[in-house]
Length: 336
Length: 136
Ligand code: HEM
Image (cartoon, rainbow over all chains, first blue to last red; front, side, top):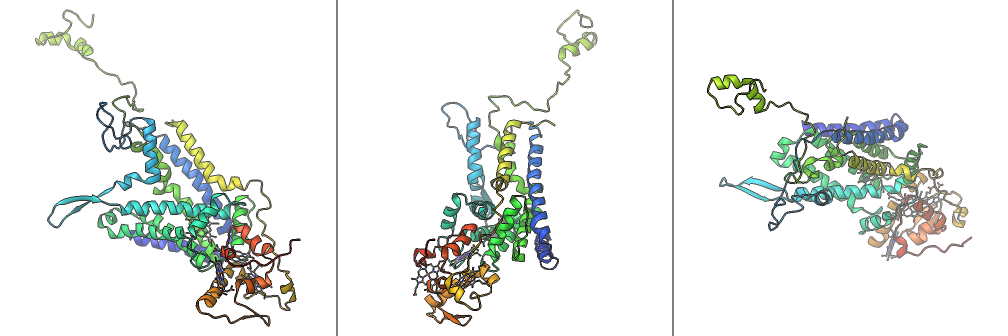
């Protein structure tokens, strides 16, 4: 059901855009209004979510640790697993954000046939994940050909490496194909591994199916149902310079692609995709494990009224003396 | 509402906002960018044609001319099929240099102008010979 829901949702989005452009001529809606709304939602929603996280207090020092913490000088510290100062936190964050270190170190637990629990290395999730993220980035950077009037310096390099094999015309860009393959694997993994399937929600399937849909429509547009890219660039630059125009001769496939991208942007702040900003704000990753050096003050702390033993004795001294219980200040009555 | 680590979060959000808005920033103050490149199809060979047509309808050529080239290349190089194509009664080779470029002999004013606009750089000319153009 959760899986079917995601498929049907994305299929419905495709059909909405296709029918809207093909039969109702809503080019202006799908080419201008929806993208603007999506970009506004993306940027504002993103900032809102981050500010909201920023305003949540962190009551305890709770970094996740991996390896030896800073201790006596002759005990080697695992600086990147168990950082004790800001520089080490930055180092660990760098490895996490750029190399997905914690996924790399991920292990899997399995029962053997003789009912023994074994732990093993599990690198496929890391591999698919990191190829997905980097190919997504490269595809996005490659798209700057539509977004800026003069090409940025990296475009030529990316395109010549990416299209190195010159397969077919227009030549195949490897990253586009790898993007599709890795998202397809990430999706298949959720279906194939029972434990993962059990914990997967529609909110896990939907973004994957949506990105697969974006990759498929993009590749269809590049290799099968080619449209006039000059007009596409006219449309994109018109949008970006706030002088929107709808040129003739752009096929419906482009509007479907753009609509799916708009949905992705608008959906972004509402979803788990916010881990893009969230990774930097997660206390388990951005705190140093220095609770033995500096005291972490709980921001919730407020002056608590405590009832000390002295006050207690003042209250009950006579009764204590009467019952033969030793007191600290004998002969004092009512604190005087 | 209190923001913890407000300074760091502000810097992070600033980086995000600038990156996310960078396509808009790069397009600021550029008024001419949304204009299509004006390509010229007034070469001597084309002017000679009675019916000024390409090997396929214009709209189709605009989007799919590389597919035509691909099929021609496959036909010639793989299937040894050099049978000419007929365009408004004239015969043209299935060839980049001697077909397309015979009519579109103004490569710089035609292919290149369009390709520069969308930042495509076909590698064909590393081997194939470009038509000689009179620099005016
Ligand atoms: C989330 C962002 C996006 C992703 C992941 C994405 C993905 C893709 C992919 C995988 C392709 C196939 C070709 C290739 O490998 O480059 C493609 C092609 C294309 N995309 Fe996107 N896209 C995105 C955003 C956009 C936007 C905002 C536009 C609007 C201008 C756009 C317009 C196009 C066009 C015109 C093509 C055909 C490119 C060609 O024939 O060279 N895409 N896209």
